[in-house]
Length: 268
Ligand SMILES: C[S@@+](CC[C@H](N)C(=O)[O-])C[C@H]1O[C@@H](n2cnc3c(N)ncnc32)[C@H](O)[C@@H]1O
Image (cartoon, rainbow, N blue to C red; front, side, top):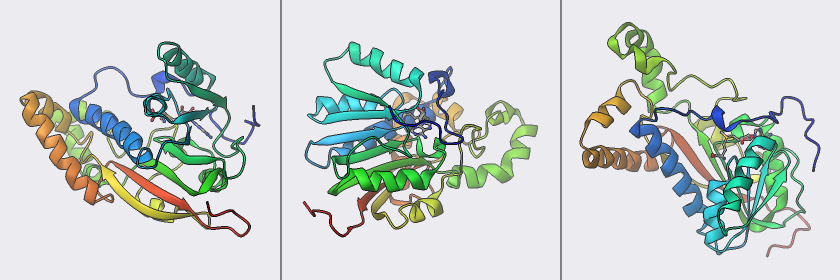
């Protein structure tokens, strides 16, 4: 186990921290799409070694293991590693669980084909320490795949000024946790501007795309629930296609990175 003592590291993340209870169709779609997108983006490379950092319940790794990947999960939370272990005991897929933090990865230089980080980077104490580490442990031919909530997407941009109106109206119940409000367990605000600069001197942005549009915007999820299921799904898929081409507007930004070539590294 590596050092977990970096200041402000959350070593006690719990499953219940993820919103549970009544999940509306827009949020359900976002979670499913994000998970599918992480798996599909990693699987664009031929199977090799993949590490998911801030892996939570490691759902994506179990799917990748089924596709032939050698899978490693890093998370500082004993609770979340325990959840992953329980899931692992019920499947044939093997995921190696490691208690560590993204800022100090206990892996050798250039030892992994893909490093993934889904919906977790904004929980890290030092995002640039993670980026540096991801660039170190990934092979020169490898990729780093990061999915990050966008708190300046269309839903947030429109939702902020409309909040007083939503609160005063009968939409109040939808405004209890407005989409633009950054949860207390996030250490910074993710958005498109931040993503564009995220690689620093260590990673080069290869491409980025968006997932989902208007998730948790006042009334949107309740409206979708009232519509016939087929129509609601068509609307969600249509808005997702718009988000794909417009990461700045989307609810989640997926970015794919290559490590910057360093002297003395074998380019294979
Ligand atoms: C919102 S959950 C996301 C879990 C999973 N990736 C998913 O998409 O369902 C954030 C995860 O990041 C982990 N985490 C928090 N700080 C971390 C750090 N410094 N390094 C690595 N993981 C961290 C938490 O323990 C938690 O499991």
